[in-house]
Image (cartoon, rainbow, N blue to C red; front, side, top):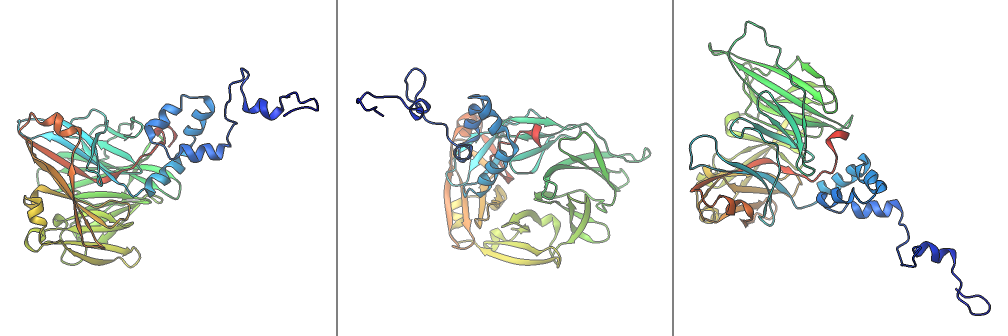
Length: 403
């Protein structure tokens, strides 16, 4: 501004907008606006921005910022799955690498996971972008978005000393929405040489070092499949008295409850899925014969009634795919889009691979070419296995040190 003589005079506002050396800088933005901008950025960019200043590091590291970022990630229509690509042409343990597969573009991008034996480690259904891995002794949780890995305390089942046999284990991560805590369920199955099977279960809350025994679970048979949703972990298994069942661990009470499968449905023929926020059973044994995929959706936990949803694919789908359904993995994104994904599991050298997306409402199938770094890395091999894990990868900025 100017004084009465016309001479320009610097105001306080001018000093706030300009630096000491006269270089123009932007006035400081409110924290709410900065947060609204940052929450829209990729995780990799945010991790770099944590080095800008202490205030930015504090803001991006705050759990409330992580919650806002996760909410936006879960609301995005674009969904990616974890896939592993390994060489099948060589005997023994195979070279295995993990990638993030975008369902809409078909692009694969590398995903860093901790080094664990690929032939023994179980990668189970995760939640909110976190993944749980178990190789029998070691159990760990990792966040592929931030490349963090948290090894859980070692533990063992409380089997009687005189009970001997071959033992296997798996671990699953779930989220207790009531207490806003992440919990890991670890299950051991002991196979007696005389034909019996025993099971033991323990639960650990992330951020603690103690495992708690779950005593009231009647599941005494090997698990077939498991899946997590907010508030519960579901295990597809069999019971000696009730037959095929779904054992559901309520993460708030840490108690099991049993769900009977629909009449006529066998556990060995179905997979556990989440369809639009509801527990579902996927059956595709009639896919090759009559082009049919069937979903049994649990609409109401109280009534425990299953609703049958049958989908008939277009007649041309077999010609488009070009190989039998045994070479397919069927996945259902958790974003509620109503898409059913058919992804190949076998890729031959220098052949093109595609995923197929069938929409329940429009009854249309879309073909998307899978491309990206994986095939350039593995072209030297003759036959590849592409394994699509049955869950979505969601970006999550939350540090495992803050859960």
